Amino acid sequence: MKHLFHPSHAFPFQASLLACLVASSLPSFAAGNEGGSINLATALSRAVEKNPSLAAYDAEIRSAEARILSALARPNPELITEVEDVLGSGNFEGFDGAIYNLGIEQLIETGHKRKLRGEVSDARSERARLEFEVAKRELLVEVGQRFVDVLAAQEIEARASENLKIARDAAVAVQKQVEAGRGSGIDAGQAKIGENEARLSFESARLQTELKRQRLSALWGAETPDFSHASGSLSAPAGPTPELSALTANVGQHPSIALAEAGVSIAQRELSLEEKNRLPDVTVGVGYRRDEAVDDNAMVLGFSLPLPLFDRNEGGIAEAEANIGKSEAIKRSAETQLRLRISSARAEMEAARMAYQLVAGDMMRTATDHFEKLSEGFAMGRTRYLELLEARRSLLSVRKQRVEALEDYHRARVTVEALTTNPDLSK
Image (cartoon, rainbow, N blue to C red; front, side, top):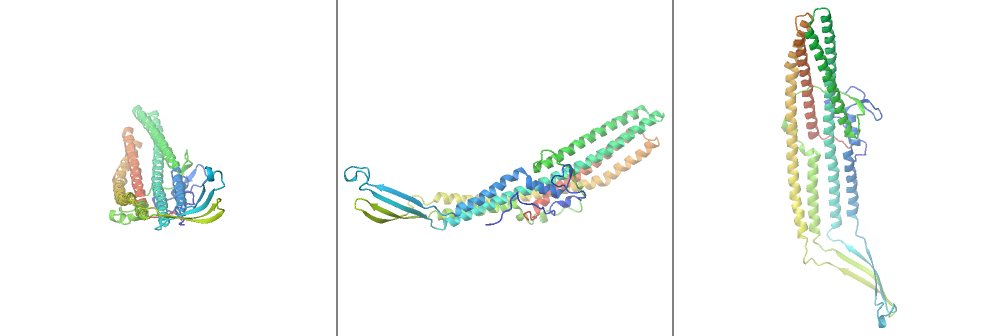
């Protein structure tokens, strides 16, 4: 029997699929290392091993394998016993004139029905395995995207922490200027407002990071985040977005297409079985006969054959033929949906790449230069603090937009790579 990969088996993830999203540098997370760091490969491995939703697929695969054994089993023989001419009247009173029959009957299937049933069950077992592969691939996408979310949240939190420190230092500097008679109370008030805004932004960013870690940990069944830091960083787009034609060239390798093809295969085998079910099966029997009235023994031979006069299984054949058409339509729909998902993800990836180039280029340079010039002017007393505060807000906003553009880019990239590559996940 074909070896099937189960969720309970070891899963050394082939990192080529998604690990290029990040430049891992910190130690990987290991079981029992509560509060440590986690990298993408470990998160993927843990999710496939412990995700609650995959457990049902494991049970279904095993059930399908068991049904193959049932389908290939021969019909059991039947033991037949009869006692005739007893408990009557006259010569048939009591058991003195009884006739005892003891025999065995065996159903003999024609048309290789048992073999065809085995092929149908084997095809259904393959479909169960492919359903698991599809669910596992979708889980990998979800893990990759949530890992990207954690990295982005950590980056935003780090920038918010830096901004809070700058706001605090500025508030102290303004207060000293006021005490020295070189500043105004308005600037001191604005500095305090800026510090409070920075503190609020930092607390919001910190809570968002905790929420994103919790959502990632939930994919392997952890009620609370069991790591303190996602290892890696979001890299800038390395080059142009691949062309759609190149991405859709091998859509047939995706498990969802193989799953749809398995449905067609099952329907075709079911049609072959239904056509063979038109052939009647034969029942033969052999037995022993004892006649107490004459004190003689004899053998009994039996043979029966259903006559297909009123039911030639037209209904079963018609249903199987309809299922073939249905399965082929499902396959065409699966290919269309997969191409649409790839196209949509590619478009999102390209839009995020363009947004990143704009934000990280002109917008970032302009906001940084403006803030630095106003900082110098404020230090020399030529710039009001309110202007400096607005410049800092603008710079913080641009930095956040840069991270969000990278987040959108890598989320889309995770989807594109998962839909267009075929890593060997069963080794």
